[in-house]
Amino acid sequence: MTPEVFLRHLFDKAVEVADPMRSLARFLPKRPQGRVIVIGAGKASARMAEAVEAAWGPCEGLVITRYGYGRPCRGIEIVEAAHPVPDENGLNATARMLDLVKSAGEGDFVLALISGGASALLVAPAEGVRLAEKQAVNAALLASGAPIDKMNTVRKHLSRVKGGQLAAAAYPAQMLSLLISDVPGDDPAFIGSGPTVGDASTPDDALAILKQWKVEVPASVRAALAAPPRVLTPQDPRLSRVENVIYAAPKQSLAAAAALAESAGYDVRLLGDALEGEARDVGRAQAELALKIRASRHPGDRPVLLLSGGELTVTRRGDGVGGPNAEFCLALALALKGEDCIHAIACDTDGVDGAAEVAGAVIGPQTLGLASAAGVDPQAALAANDAHSFFAAIGSQVVTGPTLTNVNDFRAISIGR
Image (cartoon, rainbow, N blue to C red; front, top):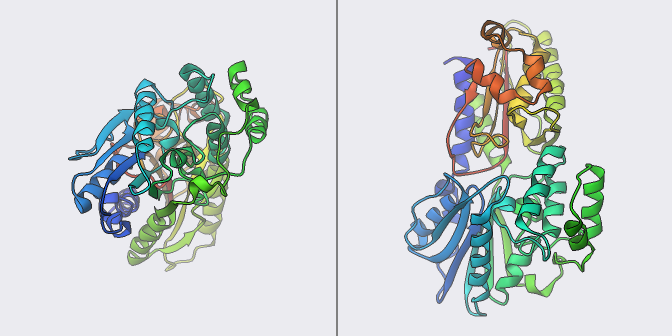
C-alpha cells in the first residue's frame, strides 16, 4: 500500500466511525409513549433521521439537509437546501419546522438532530432582514477568515431560530437534542449556531465581530442588532426541558485513525482535535515540524504520523476555487519543497471543502514535480486561493461525494515511509 493510499484509508476510517448509522442508536432512549416529533438540520441530519427510524420505526418530523445529502425515510420528511449560503428552500422549510414544533404540547417529545451545516440550512432571518441580505452577510463572513465561533455568534443574533430559539418554540414539550460536533472545542452552543442551546453573547458582541473582521452589512442588519436580544440565555426557563448530547466528535474519529496507524507500525503524534487558524499558516507550521522530525530520524525508527483535526479558515484574497483543506495541502507542499518520504492528506469529513464538491487533497514528494509537468504554478494558485484548481490539474484531489456525516477537518502527515 502506497503512503497516499494508506492516508486515504485513515481518512475513510475517520468518516466511517462518525456515520450515524453506526453510532447514533445507542444514544436513543426507548421510544417515548405519545406524540414524537423529529426535527433536524445539518449535513448529517438526514442520515441521523434514517438511523432514528431504523431504531424507532416511522416518525413524524422534518429535517433539512444539504443538496445531495438526502436519505430515504419512511415518516420523516427530508428537505434539501443550500449550503454554505442559504436559499429559499431552507427559508420555507425552517418556517414549516417552527410551525411543527410550536404544535407540540407538554406531554409530547421532540427529538432534534443537529450537525454542522445547520447554521446555513436553518434560515429564519431576524425581523426586518431579507433573505438576500442574510445571504450577503453569510458570504462575507465566509470570505473574511473569521473563526467558526465568531461567524456563528453573528448568525445567532440575526436569526429567529438559532441560539436556543428553536427549543423555545417547542416549549413546554420535552426535547432531546443529539449533536454531531464540527466545531473546535465541541461547544454545543456553536454546533449549527446552537438552535437548542442558550448563549451568553449579545448583539453588541456580534457588531464587534463584524467590525473586527471588516464585514460590511446593510442598515437593516445593524437595526436588527440594535433591537432587544432574541438569543436565549442559558438560564432561560424555556430551555429547562432540553437535554443536549454530543454523541459524535472529531476526537473519536482521530482516535480510530490513530489506532489503525499504530497497528500498521506508526508512531502516532496527535497535534490536537481543535486546531484553528489560517490554513496556509498552519500548513507551513506543520511542514516545519515534519521536516524537523524527518531530519532527526535514524535507520530503523518507526515512521511517524502527525494527526490533527479542528477547523481552519481562509481569508479570501483571490478569486480562485479553494477551501481550507486544499489550501493547507498547497502551503504544506510548498514548504516541504519535495522532501523525500513525507506525504499528507487533508480533507473535510463531510466531503465538502469550502464550497467545492471536493473533500480535500493529498500531497507527496512528487507534488511540485507534477505541477511543473502540468504547467501550473503553485505559488500563483496559493495567492489566488485556487488550491482546488491546482490539485485538479495534477490529479491529487480527494473526491468522496456526500459522506453523510461531519466531524470537521482531518489532517494526517506521514513521515518516513
